[in-house]
Length: 83
Image 1 (cartoon, rainbow, N blue to C red):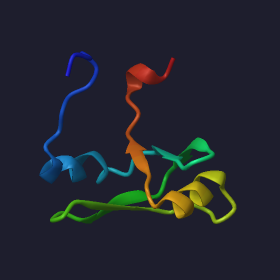
Image 2: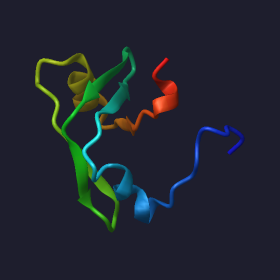
Image 3: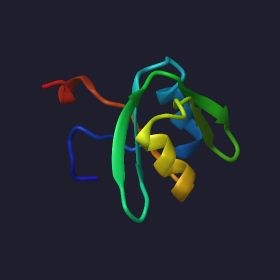
């Protein structure tokens, strides 16, 4: 990685980023839409294979995109991203 603000985390240890209950960004994309939202309910579900769970209200655009595409990404924002 060339970005000094990012550090690679081994997949088997990625649960450590979620166990402390941070607000995460959930992003999704399908054939027509791209969206991102903040979510406070995200946690590790399994370690092998690595799985996470998030709670998204059924009325959100992001959830509809995830249901359509079957995919989402979680980002854990850092303090340096605040500004």
